[in-house]
Image (tube, rainbow, N blue to C red; front, side, top):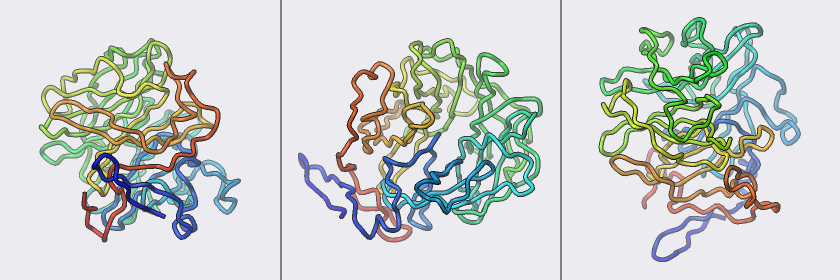
Length: 358
């Protein structure tokens, strides 16, 4: 059951396994195998959604296997998730591999899935799919990709500037340019094509915390309460741990210049972070950990933001318990975590279209 406890005067909400919930949402967050998690809170349905490019066919044998698919998971509470459902399948689409880092954004009343795609013998490029529902089915907005021809790219995300114009922010791969880049390009109103030239915002080596790998991953834009524009992004520390950090735009807009945080925000072998606001109003960060493919799980952090900075308050899933690395690698535990996930505020929506009372 779900129940509320009082701890030092603050309301705490524990998400325990209730039979009725588990029946419809049998995939516990400690079991969800996912890379580059992106969580969409959808006020219309009162549900959270996340998207994966592979499915656990041993646990869910009815789910189709093989490349060329995206699957959607649904949750009422961020802990219990539905069985994977196909929301996109290749059909006559141009690409059948490298379906990486799918993100779903609501734009002009529709749902847009942004991801990278690749066909054999070609470069990886970012593209938009669209649907009337967060569950799909999604279809390509246009046949052509958004990122520049001749560029090897990944990890596209949507940014809307202060004038309401859409941009694609993405990574120009270190595999092609050695010192990986984070770039931006303006988009058409339907998110179907680039309508300007790409701009390089910064490079991996600009991060004081980064090592020599040259990797840039997972950009995500967020405006702080005071109006400053922040960008999460990931790379590797000098000691080789996958990490997430951020930069702040001095101009408050996409062109920067971008001032890098001196140290990572999280460096215990977790990265590709994004921010979302739970139905409770709590700001959350999602990333995956550890950065070992077969063991990747979602970490969910309750966050604190000020006018010019972002801070971690608490990780709620317990998935770091066995998976942490970096400087904490020798402190990881062998036994699975049995703690019940606990939130400072109830993450469920109480009534369609309304947020939960504090």
